[in-house]
Image 1 (cartoon, helix red, strand yellow):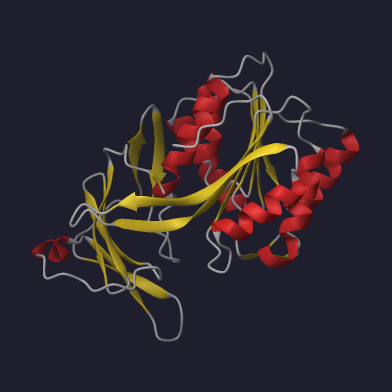
Image 2: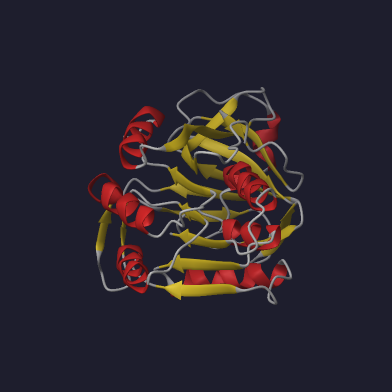
Length: 294
């Protein structure tokens, strides 16, 4: 288990009965999480929430707030600054468990001796990994997502982290179609990051299902990896895919590479348990030192 335990502005305070109590800076939110199947404690900290997302029996849900909170605020992770804003779908614009992956990306780029280090971030969301790669010294970062609103949010994170003078390209597109064009153009990358959803739709209503499209995604990504590439990092929240399943498909697709798979998670302050938050796969070519402890 790789833990994202280097935060100061974020903390998972307590968990139970399908909910997690989190501190985002000085604002405390109580949000649902289907992986939390254990019981909630009687700790009075549960009464400290500022915002509570109540699930609906009809699907979805809505926020309730005890006090007026800003529409958005910022938190820091190391040298990066990100916008936080509770959305209608319970999310906040940041997946804090991904911090361990940002550290991995940073380490791999900084330890590389390659003068040109191009990074491609697929399904890039609000761009936390994009900013980590750019701040670490990537010569170019290409950020691809299908949502214009999400890309606008990522651009805000770029400015908040003072990276607007770095080379970051924001592209709104269907990921598979974008990869097809990159293959035709002959573009190559030294690092690829991908966080594919379980299900989604592209800007032109293209349907994405991870179980159906993962092999195609990996095959296309392999075609644009530079022969001297440093890493490919994949993250998944899909419940039906285990680290072993991911390891198997990665070994078949990248037979001559070093592969590490596992879980990522967040420490829970209340009881020193760990909140599981998905799985990862790290691929490096032979001869490149990978980092198993991140």
